[in-house]
Image (tube, rainbow, N blue to C red; front, top):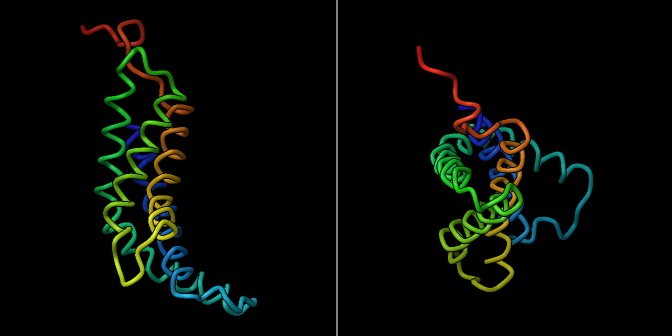
Length: 143
């Protein structure tokens, strides 16, 4: 259960931040950066945070389910699980968002792929750190 809470709490927050950064970078917003531009960026981030959680909660929970399934495969270690979940997150978001808009290219594909890669790997790593897998030795005996 902790795994799903970790993914639900971190995934939409980091994903929303990176999605906003990717779209502002693609639009040329960061060409003339000063303190007020950065301040406006964070104001928009916090105003749109509710929508990040609204639209990012289900994909984050889906990534948590994939992480949970891979966790029960004995041959895959924690590092391999983080890599697999990150690659799945990268490919899912890159194909979903990467073809949006007029300009489609490698940079746009990579930027939108990072929107899924970073939250998925970070959440999977934290889930590995704080959630022990349930095995026959750790499973409580039924009364």
